[in-house]
Image (cartoon, rainbow, N blue to C red; front, side, top):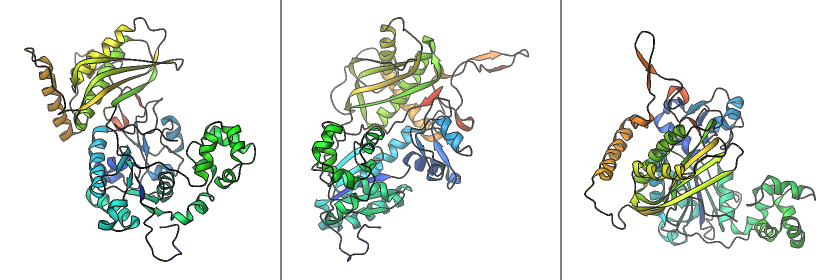
Length: 442
């Protein structure tokens, strides 16, 4: 579809900025392995009380389910939804293929997350055609090669291209010609502007500003008084002005994971066991992305929602969970007595470098290398048989003896069970758009 459907069939060369976003990416990847769930409401996330929705199928969205919504709320709104636990390594693998397709079109790719990017195709039009043709080619390649769908927005600026891809969802393409940009923007609610969240909407609504056109017709001085320094920025966006260029993605800065407990935890052993789980999840993603970490950060959020972070530099870059776990538990121990129970714990690998860069200090002690070899074998097994097919012994439930002497799992220990009886974490997973952190947006 196109905003200029009624005009002559001209592909506008000025619309060389594309924003391409996968449709319900985590769910779409899961459905590749669960095709029988197509057409039914599906939610990716943990079913535990404090977890949130990572991704929802469009069938689930019809019930009002949205990403970052508390899982408990989502299940009340759509009790028939099928919950699938996340598989971040799988998402990273598919993401790399998506970005490979993008970079085959143009080297000017600004990756925002695992499932979206800006492309500047100005240098590709002579070879591949206009923006609409290129967008359709990319969508077809993703569908044919990966079996998932993407939505594309084409415009003269990044801001408008992002709006266009959002309005094209799911599985569509929307091009906003340069000479129709302002007219199109002025049909939209004020919430379409970057930087206008719920609180800003309330402030603007108090003086009768509800649409982008209202913002455009409001004096800059008034917007500055209401919104401070961002007032002028919002005014520029309302007129379609966005001078930012597509910037080729910076190297990844960190990879990590965090968990919110279903009930606050004050037991150090439980925290250490969760750090072991997070260390393995993070190390797996490090190796899948081809990175090693030069530092480790620990994050704790207490029961009163206060948050503390601590980090340390490693003697040498690592990609093994054993090394990450050792550093993280040392940081935890260094905190001493905690003031209150812990609501959330997180681990991040920082100061990343590609696995082929730099040098590794060789030692007579082979223990670190043995861990690395063992964990890579674990990657191979879980890649073949599914995540959590093999886990470290420290994450297994201990056995207890019933009266007949038979061994059984102790329900008071170890990980909770995930959705539909599959192994899962002891807590909810926070939204994680992948290894690449989005750039700051205006």
